Every structure is written in structure tokens, then in C-alpha cells.
Length: 222
Image 1 (tube, rainbow, N blue to C red):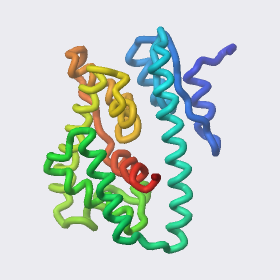
Image 2 (image 1 turned 90 degrees about the vertical axis):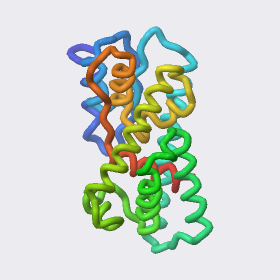
Image 3 (image 1 turned 60 degrees about the vertical axis):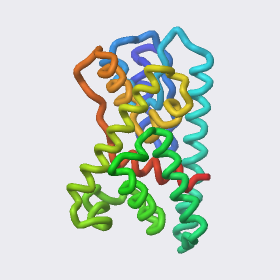
């Protein structure tokens, strides 16, 4: 590719309507270059030499994410038709949220109940995180928005640490592959993994809006 590299190719596709999802395979080991790849818009970075099982699992997760997004688009259209969420659906949705929080090891955190309640609020009111700031959403849930945000952020951070530890132990772990780039940013999970390995003093960061939106997506897509 004359005058082009993988990162430039990915950037070129970011402004089109139906942009593809990119999985990058490279021998590059530089953290800065990998960070730039994620910033350009890739979904996953797989370092060579290639592990066939890892690539297969990554492709599977990307396909599942696409399927969920398509289902969410269909559900949004139904929501536009003023369909209501019945009690049996409410129970099913809440159970799904609890199951996911349990898988990432934060069900016992103080903020876990807040997460469940807020995701249910979003679903029942047919709203999505992209349309609101955190402060606007939390104010509909509790007047003490700062305290709620702190509880939730601590819980979500605990999940990031748990996911990073799973990745260190086994980067083919199903929970790691499922949630490291859906509830969290894979780039930030990698940063946290390096911190836990004592390779870096920098810690991974969480995006609460991404986390809550992804939870909604998981809950309503099945």
C-alpha cells in the first residue's frame, strides 16, 4: 500500500455511514503504536505471531457484537412504536444485568445496585446514554448525583481490574474476550494489565457512558 499503513486505512473509513469493523494483526509491540491503532478506530489488536484460537475467538466476539447492534436497532424501532416493557420482561432484564455484573466480579460492590437500577431506568423509559450526560441521567435517579457517580465509578473500576486480571491469567478466557472491548475499552484494559504486571505506572480508565450503554445493549438484544 504505497503511502498508506494500516492505521491510515482505518482512519479513512471512519467518516463513512456503514464503516467496517477492523481487527488489526501486526508484529508491532510499541504501546504508543498500539494506542494509535485503537484511537484510529480498530476493534481489536492481535499481535503476531498469530494464535489461531485467539483470532477465532476475537472474530466470534466481533460478529456477536454486530448481531447485538443490529438487534438493538430493531428494538429501537419498536420502542418508537410506544411498546411498553411488561413485568416479565422487567424481571428478565434485571436478571441479565445481575448475571453480567456477577461475571465481571462486581455484584457485591456498593454501586452494583445503582447500576442495575439505572440500566433498568434507561430501558423502561426507552432512553439511551448517548442522548444524556451522566449528570442528567443520575439526577433522574437520585438527587445526590455526585455520590451515585462515585459509587458506580468505584464498582466499574473494580470490574476493570477483574477483567485485566483475567486477561493476565488467560487471554482466551471467555469473560475477558466478551467484555474487555464491549463494557470496557480493550486499550484501557491492556493499560491496566501492564499496571498489574508492574510494567507501567499508568492505570486504565473507565468510560461510564460506554459501560452503561453496553449493558443496555446486552440486556435488550437477546
